[in-house]
Image 1 (spheres, chains in turn red, green):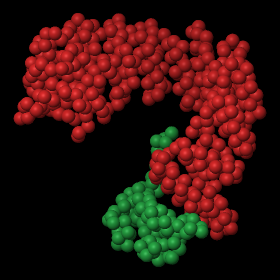
Image 2 (cartoon, one colour):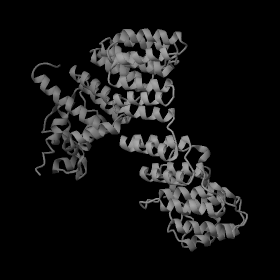
Image 3 (cartoon, chains in turn cyan, orange):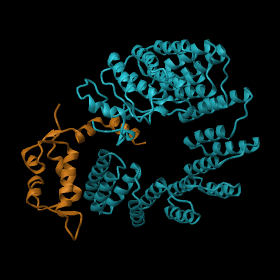
Length: 466
Length: 100
């Protein structure tokens, strides 16, 4: 309680006046936080989103979703002259607040009532999309309510278009109802309303993330055979990315073949994705092959390509070659960024050349490239592994001043290194810092400390540690 | 990354984690020290460690040692001086393994 939406603070709104006048009103416009404060609003294309326009307006919370009370309240609001214009946005906001609590049937009745009693309000597609979003959120295990709204829209002279399909699909997916989204897309495609490539690719992306590969493949097949929708290059990139993340490179290669058969020429993004897949499996030879192939095909490598390349080579211990590419990328006009340098430092630390990595930090700063948290963590990790504890502590001090978070692995290595030297008190301080900076959960930080101290006790008994 | 790691910790070691964060009825000595009747092992450790810091009980010559005051002695087996490295083990003594 007591949390005002920012737009309501200090604003003299007719509703506030209304509460003061009629304190006995059973369900005044409560000052509860708006309903979207505790719900995640899914990421959507801003142009297509009706709720985004309305979200800046004050929220009216209808506690018990009673239709008659809402009607009375609305009548009172429109009959009280105030500073807030009773325009489309206001009405949408009222409708949204009501429908988020009430049943769909009541919401439609309420909208009809609003149109009747407030003649200057002429709902447009954004109003109907409010209803559509709510019908998608109401989980009643079928999409009948979605269809109900779509039919209602048609009857009001706003037949569903690609925007409404997109809104519905995105809302359904955000509620974890991918199957219903597929069903809806198929239904609408049957009615000659095929999804555009954004909606289609969005759905494919959701499916590869959250469902089995077979579901995705059958969806693509059905869309192709039933409605003639071909997957485009973006679709293939999404799918290749997914199989690469699952380390299924055979499937990725197959998809690459399919893509060429369909007449698409793989672009930079496709190659970068495949390269990333090889990196994850530490197949540096294949990584280089992809790079060669890109050059053969005349695809211009971009910064991401070089970063991936350097990362892959460093990871599999071919730091010398990685360094060579640092020169090549500069020649090609791409300036190495923090990611490039961090990958390279990572490789050098793996080889045990932590001092060289530290020198590289100086070099990158001299070139005007700012290191990030990841860079410092990599270096600290490498320094501790290379038993250069004093340098590590110096670096840690810098991190502390900058308020940077520690990564779990790096924290563990650092604590172990400190304890090995018998600097337990400092390890405790690092523990405090990790907790204080919220680098990890208290439990994780403490478990590491505890197990390290346990190990220290054993090591001391055997005379291995100070 | 963290939630994933956390998940891994939990799936790997559900028991160990539960030992650390489950609230436990405290024995009377600890109850006096913390002023609470229930706490977790992690909460107890944080409490003792911040008590040491607040009262500056670390030995000025060797920060790894803690010179216990009367209150701390009561819960740490009556030792006059405790190594920081032993602290988690000493606290663990108050939290016997539960037989289930």
